[in-house]
Length: 159
Image 1 (tube, rainbow, N blue to C red):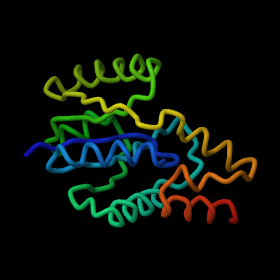
Image 2 (cartoon, rainbow, N blue to C red):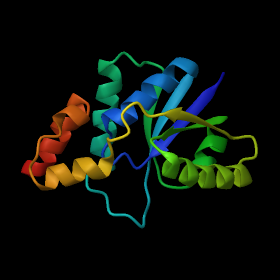
Image 3 (cartoon, helix red, strand yellow):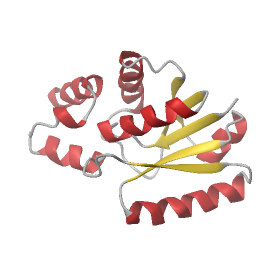
Image 4 (cartoon, rainbow, N blue to C red):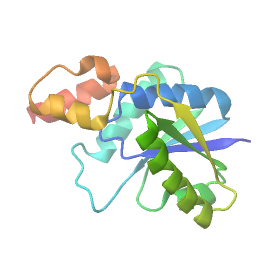
């Protein structure tokens, strides 16, 4: 079986992220969307709630070969532990490519058989930072995130 992991902070999960998931889900037998927890960064939205919102989004789109996990550690180790041979990355621009190539090189040091597959983002203007900025100023971002994620973000704003 060809298994892949698409890891990120997903703080928050955007339509751009979801487009990459839909592309990768067609090519791989099993795709793990891994919410990678970085102890150095403060999350805006709880990982467990984002996991639930992403899972609902996958279910709503009939993506049955995908699973959402939370991992506190090195993603390459997650891949080794779960017999995953590919990591998926989305690219919006040249800066993303340079950044991702560094991560791919480190992953290769840890897991020499781990390959990185890049998917071009269809909408390179969407980012989690943009959503956070729009949210901060109470601007509508509903067209930039899946409905289940939008519900979560609105709930977090009202708390």
